[in-house]
Image 1: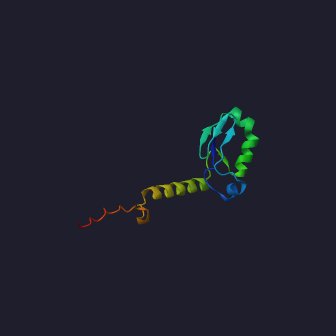
Image 2 (image 1 turned 180 degrees about the horizontal axis):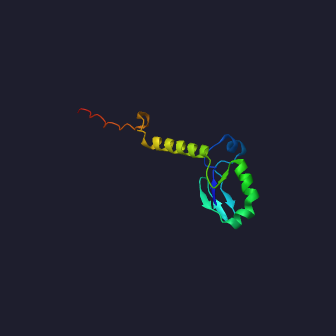
Image 3 (image 1 turned 135 degrees about the vertical axis):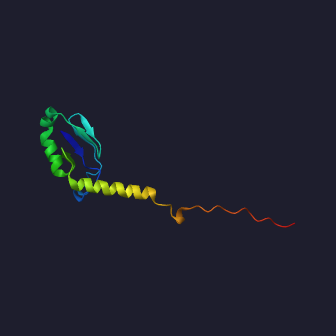
Length: 105
């Protein structure tokens, strides 16, 4: 079964518990924030109580990701794309100084 780490997207519960952007282990596999991996049935049975707790806390999902997470992740990606495509503001432009005026003899 596929296990997902949901800690890359902020929710009030994750923020309150200090669980944003946390890597966690499922058996011998480490799942980084936003990552997923297949977990074999034997490992799944062995770590089921911990996984159920992680699902209840909102840091993990089994099988499918919640639609709320998918929507927030898509919105976050859209914001990143917009920020990359936005033109530089005039405030950030550096003015090139003019050469010094020549003085007469």
